[in-house]
Image 1: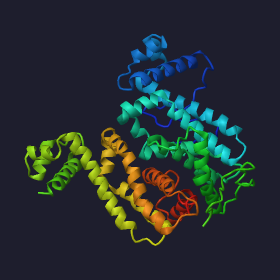
Image 2: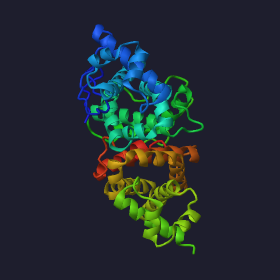
Image 3: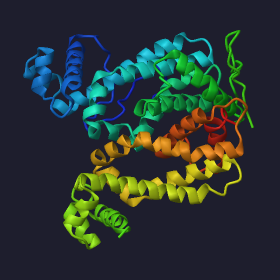
Image 4: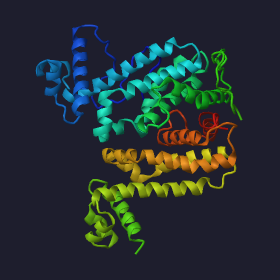
Length: 248
Length: 185
């Protein structure tokens, strides 16, 4: 089980194909880590072009303009270790961009919309992920379904929960955050013709229609202390009535 | 012989249960069903690949029939969702063949489940729509939008429930009333 205790604590990779790397390396902090980042970025470029199966350590070294020896010195575990580092790095990058946009939002609706739009854009615009989904689904889908998706949901819920803490108790916040992540993946795996979560207007409509009433009900359904701030801090003149059918 | 196709699918399923997806051949399915290879190709011109895809779809359809049996006489939409979630999630966990293949051959099964995922969520939406109509939605709710959203969510929860313990009736009741129906009812 992946545990991330707060938005800024160490992150674990979503999946760990046996290489046992558990810590997040601070990007660009010294020569060794910038070598790591160059190799990771080279691996991403190779994967976006030719997928995972065909990418070799030689390809990655050439792309990074390093020698094989440098790559193996940085990643003694070879290709598997590089792939683990790619996952870890991309998750860290996604989380840090999410932290920026969600941290800037000032009401619950905006936190949800900002996080979901950013996640949908980053995942939808990720060239290596897109290549794998299109051409090597057998490689990527096991990481994004069933128990592996549960792991992603736990990690993402733990990561995002603090951003909801002003409005929700820790348990409610974790469930709400996990729900938002679930929605992003559900629409990514199976795009809807008239709902594009990378589009803020579409996401806002979805959040107002289905998500905010649900969070209100989630908050009403437990007796653990709710946050002090009213949940519906919708901007003045908001056209949508989010209280529709709120709580049974 | 209208039941040859059905017999072939059952035979293929039995072979897959025994040997897995990769090792099941047209010959195996023909032998198991007691028909010739030519007969298999008459029903499944695409051979092994088509047979394997068809058996995944066939098992899916059987699953939906069982799900329908489970929920069709529920009195409220909440009860439909509660019973359906618990049944579907446990059916997945207790499905020995599915679980074994998820362990041993996920790379073969999952692309087939996902390629057909679009159809799956439409199937679930179509399944849920009459219940939304019958049990009522809040004024102004768009039936198609509600059914589409609900279908995506239901599929997500039964596959990966995350923090929700679907064996705890209190949690299921809370999940259904908050994350599934609050925006619809």
